[in-house]
Image (tube, rainbow, N blue to C red; front, side, top):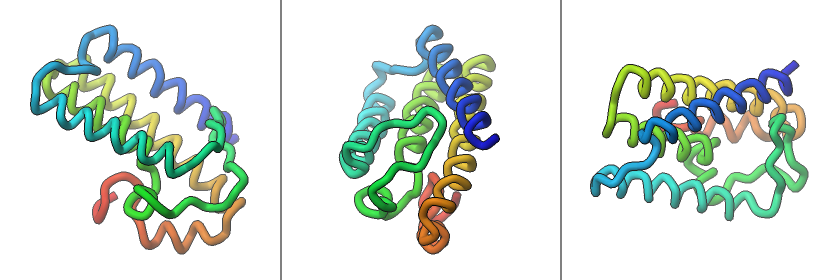
Length: 144
């Protein structure tokens, strides 16, 4: 069941991002917004490099090779989802409309859905995840 919910959340994220791209709200040319988007892209790249050559699993299956707790994972448990949401919401706030905010909310809901599914699957594969989760936040250090 978790894998099905995870796939649905991924689809929701993809559709929301596609909607934002179509509406021109995903990327920005405003200098301040662009700087934040570059920072978000750098966070995603750092997380991908830290995670290593493990493959992406659409159904949020835990990967072999041990729990990653270094790099950005030292501070937040889900830096890739954080980077996606930061990137998108920066563009949304720069060119906001009710529809863009709705799409951003759907993107965030999909990311949170994936996070909760992944955590349930990861804790089964890596019992030490519970201790790691108590020491780090999901997306925003010191808050969530």
